[in-house]
Amino acid sequence: MDLEVNKQLVLDFWKAFSESRFDDALEMVADDGTWWVPGSGEGAGEYAKDEFAASIKGIGEYAPNGIRVTVSVLTAEGDRVAMEAECYGKLANGKVYNNFIHVLHMIRDGKLVKIREYMDTQHVREVFG
Image 1 (cartoon, rainbow, N blue to C red):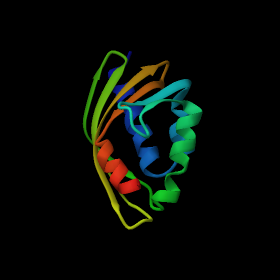
Image 2 (cartoon, rainbow, N blue to C red):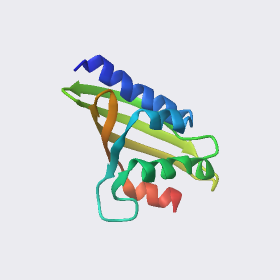
Image 3 (cartoon, one colour):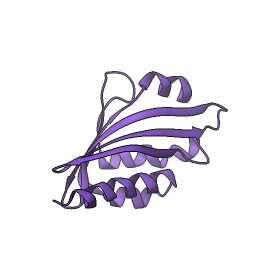
Image 4 (cartoon, helix red, strand yellow):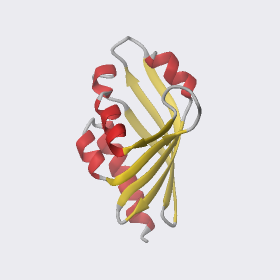
C-alpha cells in the first residue's frame, strides 16, 4: 500500500469535486463504495454510490459555481487517508456555504470504498434549508 498514492487519490477526488467534474470524481469510488454522515437528522446515514452520485450531481442546482473544497491537512496510514478541509460556495439562494469538514477515506484496490464525512450539520441545514 503506497501512502502517497492513496493521498493523491484523495486529492484528485476532491479536486474533481471542487471543479464540478462529478463523473470524474465518481470514477474514483468503488462500485460498492459508500458515503456516511453521522447523526440522525436529514442527510445523515450511509449512502450507496448511486445515491451519493445523485446527491452530488444536484449541487449545481444549489451552488451554480460549485463548492470548492480546500484541503488543509492530509494524513495517511494503511488503507486510510484522513483529511481536514474547508468547503466554500455561494448558493443560488444568496447564502454562503462555508463549512469545515473532516473526512476519513478508506481505499481498496486504488478506489475509495468508504467515505466518512464529519461536518457542521446545523450549518448545512441553515444554508441549504
